[in-house]
Amino acid sequence: MEVQDKLPPVAVPLSEVGVVGVKVPLSFEDYKGRRIVVVPRFEAFIDLPAWRKGIHASRQYETIIEVFSQFAGKAYRLERVCAEMALEILRRQKEASKAKVKASGDAILEKTTPVSEHRSYEPYRLLASAVAVKKPEGGVEITRKIGVKVEGVTACPCAQELLAFHARAKLREKGFPNGTIDKVLRSVPLATHMQRSLGVLVTEVPGNREIDAFKLAEIVEESMSAPSYGLLKREDESAIVLRAAERALFAEDAVRIMMKKFVEKYPNLPDKTRILFKVRSYESIHKHDFIAKKVISFGALKAELEANRYDGGRPGGKIF
Image (cartoon, rainbow, N blue to C red; front, side, top):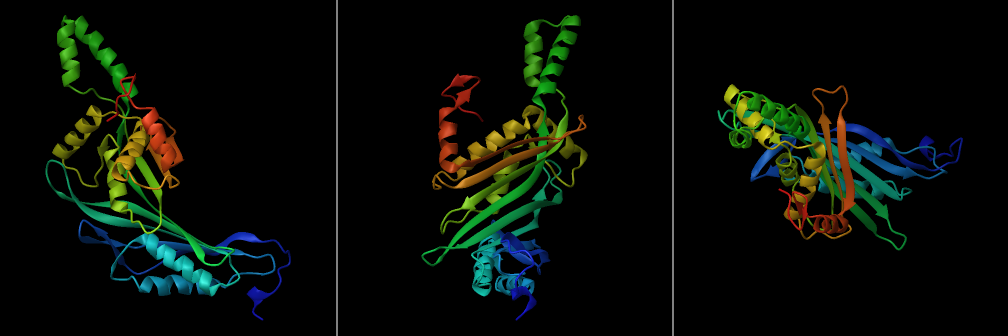
């Protein structure tokens, strides 16, 4: 009998035991017909019954490597790889009733800066997971998730509004008429403090459907005041700052816009599908950060969007 199969000193079941931080060789995800390099890092867990001392950790590591080798060098979806691994772990560790596999890795996309059109390589964090559970009547139920973490820029509308009051008072002091002041303030976006913000969008992937991680990344990026870039020339910087100032958004706004865009992009998901929306604002003038977050089912999300449509406070309108 192997040590792992002996009785433990304290007979208590554990919900998750496994290996973390397993890196695998380079492979690819599809993006607009191109292959993008990703180096995933995997975590794999099973539940442990009270009567077993430990798991055979080497089997989980071997499963990760062997399953991934089937996908290496091919286009793949990370959540499907996680599902294959979870199923194989359950097959090899027969005493387990549940297996969970998580993966994350950076996809580096080539993008073009908005004005100078320089080439810039931008990282997008891909997130994936799968849970395989043995059903009492036989068979295995799989739950897959796919998600992204994307950085962008948000601009504070509160400070911008206060600066508008200040600018209006100064212009009045200089003798400008109210009509001219209104025209100027409508035409020229005012300064405000801006921050690098991290948007997170994770959704369950129901049944045999596919959800493209890079489409999720586009939703997150489009929900910010402006995108961010690793490389920006002076003319690019001014374009990004101007765009952000013209579309000043709280983190709360960005999360809500993500929710609306998600429903527009995937209108026919099952109502029970669970989705996470989150934005963390790395504040520039505060010594703390700010987070806005919501976890909700797709059916409830559609109902809330429909019930709370508005435009400038008028029920029945639309936002963005």
